[in-house]
Image (cartoon, rainbow, N blue to C red; front, top):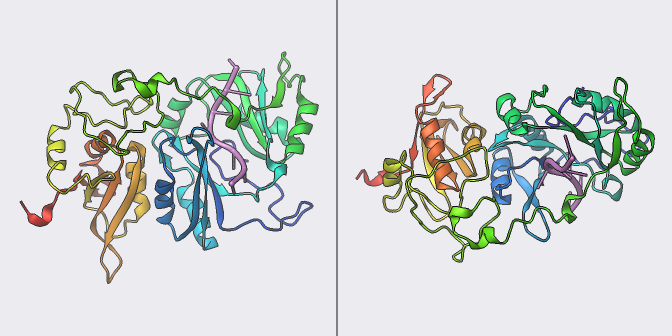
Length: 372
DNA sequence: TCGTATT
């Protein structure tokens, strides 16, 4: 059935009340996976609030470093909102990630430590092959075969089923229950898959919470931005952005983590945009850059703006301006992005973009009430 | 040849 990690998990027993208690499967609590590293809890809340009223929202962070672990939970008040969130937000591309939205299983000790690392796989083994190999031992939550160019794959195919990248011969299988994983190790470790000559190794995967390999060099926090190559959070003394013009040589690399998110740089492409945005009292309101989007269709909803701007970087909030009577979009909206450079790229990319049969106008928000 | 999936 499912051939990639983007799909909502299929309940192999149809979700009916079989052996294991189908008791308190929450219909409102969602787990969100593959979140962009920079996405904050409030940005997640904002995104999911575009569907319906959120009861609670939690981004899971590393207890030591505070870094996002790339997943979180969103609990709605209403089950129908949770279902709608899955239908509309699962598979949404944000920055270089494709998020996954699915129902959270009830938390328990039995589901922890159920992730397996598999190596020695034949290079031609597909994700589906891998699932077929492991599925006799339990319900598979996720599976993945590592490829050399996963980034390219996600951008080109949107995380599709085929894997143009070359398999590295290693992968992961996450089972629903730890006992299922244990049994898979016993039965499959050291065995030779059909059509292969090499035995596979099956073992428990490293636990990402207690590894020490992800700590960036201390120097990354101490040296000037020129030497920064790591995406970790910079704790600016002011706790907020400071305007630091750099040379106009900066280039933006959307696919790497090399965008310095805590300094504003002049971009040779963006001089006039910057000039506009720096008008008094406008785009930068102290927490992000407000972008004006014009010529939206009457039926536009918030998720459209998320879809449009999300791929360009951190989006804090979106707003569709509606007529109070008809509840239809009045033709414009606003998007607030955290980082100046990402906002510039979004504007340059989306201004003039044809959405439906409408040509969008996208710019930094200006203080047009004064009609200066 | 180790990804960011259980509060």
